Image 1 (cartoon, rainbow, N blue to C red):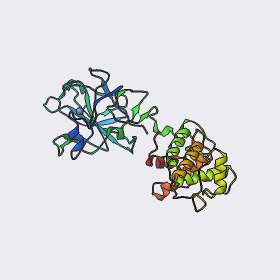
Image 2: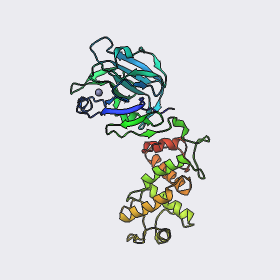
Image 3: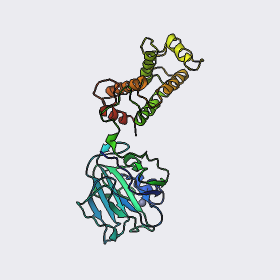
Image 4: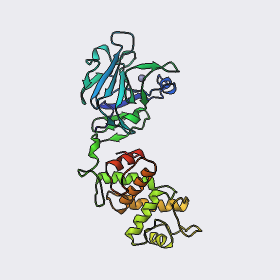
Length: 336
Ligand SMILES: [Zn+2]
């Protein structure tokens, strides 16, 4: 499966979807769409490439006063920063002579869809909208703007910036996710999962993700499983609670000496305090790295446990990071 990304070699956005120039009523009406104006390398006419195979579903405006617009839908499901599904895209303002495709054509990945133009615009650019699923038309919204039909999404929810293809000059304040690898299925190793003993760049990405889950001032599932990893490594009773012995061992290894046990005599799941925040930071340092050791394995168990509780993971709580676990991690915000 491929990732979906912005199809211009220079990313220079001159108006975001909240732009007061002409986009505000698009994104603040009902229904809404979320256009960006892409102006390419300079004031000239840069082209827009298909990032994946896309089918032309509609072309409007050629030879008429209607602003030229083409709609395309990916021929297969793609990976976006927020979902996996087919996606659509519309490109507006290209000139009449810049459309060689017809409805039903498939534009292959890497082929030029069209070029920036001035049809219905004062300067060369493309007005670009994105969404999930299918679209081939406009509808007038409550603020009088013509917006795409379908499940319109913000551009950063649908498209990555592919750093090996695009040079980013200006995103007009939009936080896009960047990637240097558009082959989504390449994340897992050939055997199909990561397990204890593995290492490398992708394991580091997993660990970075887990650190964001451990950090905080709350003793939740991640803290619990990290404490168990700490106890396992240090040959202590693996109950996942922090009593005097576990706390003492943590202090030997650099935990702030001022951390005090609560009145009950131990920290446990559900606790929340400044001291828990210090412990979580200490555990984060243990998780950190590019090695799939006891901490990574147990963080995976935390992820799988939470996924099971939330009904998004239905496999074993085994600490192995395979396709189902990857999907679960993505559900909770993991990106790579
Ligand atoms: Zn525009």
